[in-house]
Image (tube, rainbow, N blue to C red; front, side, top):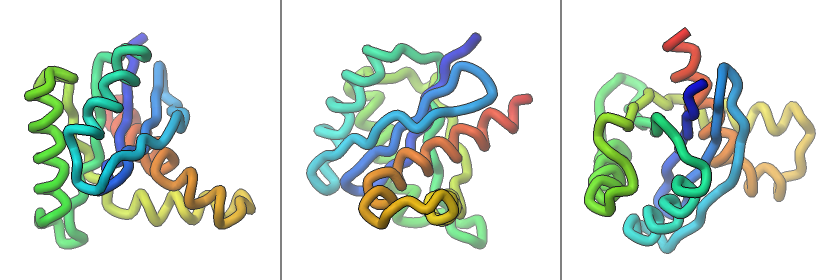
Length: 140
């Protein structure tokens, strides 16, 4: 079975989820200095080497009207650093529309009655889980 890793990229965090089937599991949140993607990629790369993977699914934050903007540029900059550092090959990357995943993640955690502190700690990895599940559902 293929192993997939889902990412929800922020300016200071990377939410990470993994899957070896149809369900994904939130794994961790990687923290780095704001907009220091080199540091983020180094930290992510050690996770990727430890876990192994076939596909890296990264949230692509389009605007609600489908256009791209500053957040998509940020993701592309991050991907460029990953490729330069050889953390991943271009053919391993899948970009997935992530509109509303952070909001859905927050709603899931509220429904699960998690404290605000737990919600803040886990929102990025839960969003990564939703991004990864979006991809998994598209390939069924």
